[in-house]
Length: 238
Image 1 (spheres, one colour):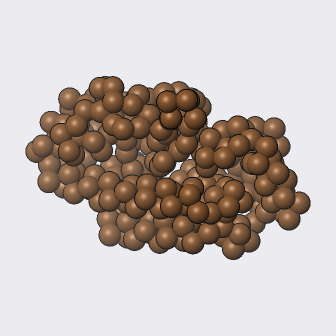
Image 2 (cartoon, rainbow, N blue to C red):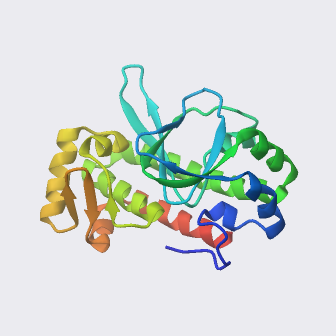
């Protein structure tokens, strides 16, 4: 995992990469909050009240069919923020934002964020860079969910989640994992059992621990490497 060479004022990458005067403009308005698993931060096409800059939390962008079937289309961790739709003068998003892995984030009212965004070319560029990374993730996830096996998709998701929260232990149920990769609980249970037998993970009730990243990267599809490379490039250019 690559990190910014600057001294860290915040563990959120966007905030930490801002010049000092830009950071000082936002800092008095940032509220550090603890977010809980399954908490809904914004709903599809409903006005967004706050934007969030993750610190240790992992946020999922999920979409549902009319029948209620749900799949994750993207995720955001310490590298970014949720509220990028304001770049396009939109105050709602085509996905629901949920807390997938509990943790901390900075919370900021949309009014203040939009006001600063309109005045700050630097912040606008940082958010634009992250939005481009998110678009790559969205398109790669769509391709992956259509063409790759449950095992490949599960390995991709677990590796990407660990990249964002930077811990080998992920507090997740098999039901959640099935939703995240667009599969079923029985299929995910079979694959987690296979991966556990091979020594790649340890799966207990409500928790998955990655034991062997190298072999997991070999077991996943090319989608993970593409996203990983873009992730590294994004961190380097900022």
